[in-house]
Each structure stands twice: as structure tokens, then as C-alpha cells.
Length: 119
Image: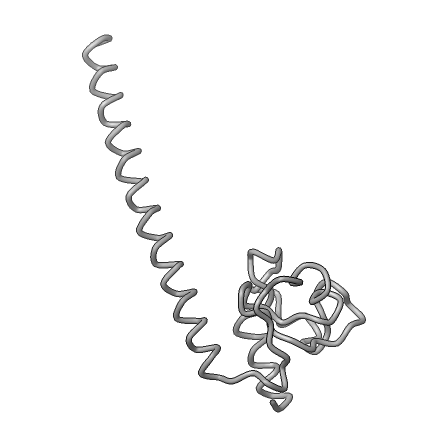
């Protein structure tokens, strides 16, 4: 994998929210260094959390995760993971919309009962 491909992975995926990262702040960071272990070089990619990691991360936070070394990573594999991630996000959006509808319905019922009691 070239340096440009490596940087592209960091830009697109950054540290995932599950790993406590901030995807939006990638522009201010050295994309070759670990976001957690600042002096460690990025050496692998965690498929579970969709983030780049150093060896220290691999040994602790990502110990039992599906990890691939950057020099072995394939773009097709990342596209598949990105698709899976997109599906999960879509599912969460749908669940949120459903919750909003339920809350709205509860609020309408509450307002109606309140009006019946006090108006």
C-alpha cells in the first residue's frame, strides 16, 4: 500500500466513534501516527471499528478484533466493510425515526389529555 492510499484510509475512516475517535479533526493530525499513542506509527487497520491502529492498540483495545496489516489490506475488503457500516447507520436512522414518531404520538396524547383536564 502506498503512502497516499494509507492517508486516504485515515482521511475516510479516521478513528471510529466506537473507538472514541474524532473523524472530523483529521486535517490537524499527522495521518501516519496513532491518535491514541501519538509517537507510534500506524501499522494496521481494524475491520471491526473501521480505524487505523498502531501495534500498541493492536495488543490492547483491538486484541480480539479482525485486523489486517496495512501492507496486506485490499480496497475491495474496505468497500465491503464500508457498505456494512452504511447499512448499520441506515438501520440506526430508521430506528431513530421510529422513536421520534412514538414520542410525537405520546406528546399529542399528553397534550390532548391535558387540554381535556384543564380547559
